[in-house]
Structure formats: structure tokens, C-alpha cells
Figure: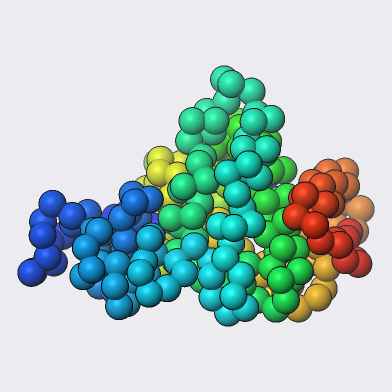
Length: 278
């Protein structure tokens, strides 16, 4: 499993004065797919939520599902058929089969407008293909929410004094890109708004939170590698280079990731580009 630096959002309960309480879910959002996240971080479906300043959901004055920098709307590329083509390959008994959804991905995407909207349309398609190639590998076609046998592994870096481990918690891989280690859970939680060190399970308990975590890691650690033209190989290095690149013990996984990437590029009608391996 990749050792990822991910983020996960938490819904902070609250009521925004002057807004109808039946629409309010909580600050920082994580709204249902049919509701908007207002400029103040609350969920609802009226103009106050979906109008000016709307950050995600069915906003009226923006393209919250990825339309932005280059006019590409990610939801038009990540169609239900594309998403189903991945998750349909997971066995019916997989925990992730009932957990991961396209709606959850699009909901999380509202917080990361730069994803899939940088460069040309082909650049956007390559980034989307790369992201889902890694997610497919990490989760086994959306089968796994948590790392296999993760609880038996030691993912506590005791030398990291900024993000000290809670001895009662485990920091094994969780979510679409398998967040691991205390030094990843800590800053991830701080950024999104949950207690990553004392409640790492949050990553595996809410699908929108999981996708936001994956997108946070991607935008902070991988996005520039693929959008700057370094190639898919650079994304492998950014995600799990220590184990898989330069003949590492997990090097066999490189070709698996590349295979998924090439497949998704073909589905999206874009050339995969050069520098596919690391």
C-alpha cells in the first residue's frame, strides 16, 4: 500500500444565523450531493447557499465539480459509467463496494477546483487518469477502505515530535490513497479539520472525507508532477517511490499502476505521454 499524506474533512456542527436550520449541516461542509456548500461553510439548497460564494455542490454561479482554470468540468469526464467501470470489478463482498461512490467523489471535488482543470484538456484527462490509476491500485478497484493487515504494522515514527503518536491508535493505510503514518495523519487532520492523531479512523468512516483526503494529498504532493509534464512515472515516485522506484522491493507494482493509467487514458481518449515509469 502507498504511504500517503492525506487529508480528511470533518463536519463541524453549527447553525448560521439567518439561514433556515433545516438546511444546515455544519461548517466546512461535506454536504449531501444535492445540497450546496455556502461561502460560509454550511449546507443548504436555497440561493443563500447555492448563489454567490458557493464552494461546492449544485452551485448556480460556478462549476463546483471541477470546472475552473481551463474550462474542463471533471464531472463530464468522470462519468457514472467511468466510475462504475472501476468499482464493478470489485467483488460484491468488498467493504468499499458500498462505501465509495461517484457522488462522494464529486462532493469532495468541490473543495479542490484545481484538480483536473490545469493546462490543456488533454492535460486534464491525463491527471484524472493518473489519479484513478493510483486509486485503483491502492484500493483494488475500490474494494478496500483500509490496508490489508494494516493494524499489525508499525506506522508510528516516534522521532517526529510535532505529530506524536497516540499509543492507542493505529496509523495504517485508509481511504482511496491509503493514508499512513502519524506524520501524515496529523497535518492532514489539521488541514481538513479533524483530529488525525486521535481519530485516524475518520478517514475510513465517511466516503466524502476519504475522497477529500485523497484529493488533498494529490493536490499538495502529486498534482504538480503530472501537470508540469514530468509524466506518470513522477506520480509513482511522489506516492510510493521509496518502495517501488529504482528497483525497490515493491517495483512490480509500477507496471500495474502504469497499466491502469494507460487503460484509463485510452478510455478518456488521450495519449498517456512519456516517462511512464520511475
